[in-house]
Image (cartoon, rainbow, N blue to C red; front, side):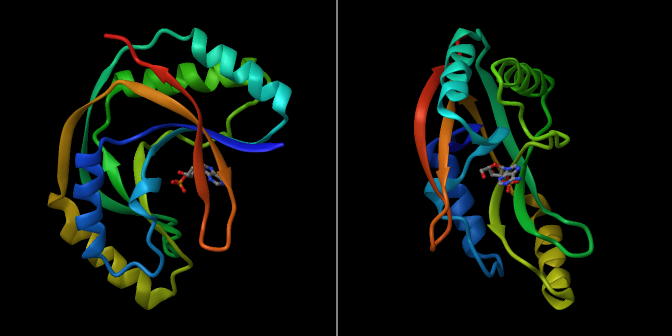
Length: 180
Ligand code: 2AM
């Protein structure tokens, strides 16, 4: 079984902008900049034959390039935040792309975890107590002016995620071009 997900990688320039923003945040555990990405479909543990079907299905999709931007910082998890992120500016073409990729994965036998699609780049994950939560909320509010991009997304990637002591390690299993 392989723990897998589909995501958009980020260009170096956007990664650097995010790591500067991240440096200034009081995050207990920071996602390393090489791990920054925009998740499109989290597949969980997938058997190798199903993953091969997913690869074929994703390779057969013809999806357009997208101009994407980041705007603002936020928290997921309500009163007990679990993660801190930069928000992707909502884009109907991105939502369509995500839906088509999720459908292709499901038809290939690896349904994505059902979560409402809120595109973002996770900067830190943690278990926050109330004091941390308030500090992080303030940082998110102060980060409302954070903006990066636009950049052109010209590919999407099937990643393998391996859990390690220092956090997960992501490897590219396959890359699929987005065509103009
Ligand atoms: P997150 O950034 O919002 O935490 C790889 O783990 C990617 O898949 C992460 O970006 C993570 O989203 C996303 N993901 C979605 N559901 C997940 C789950 N149940 N477990 C781990 N990662 C998940």
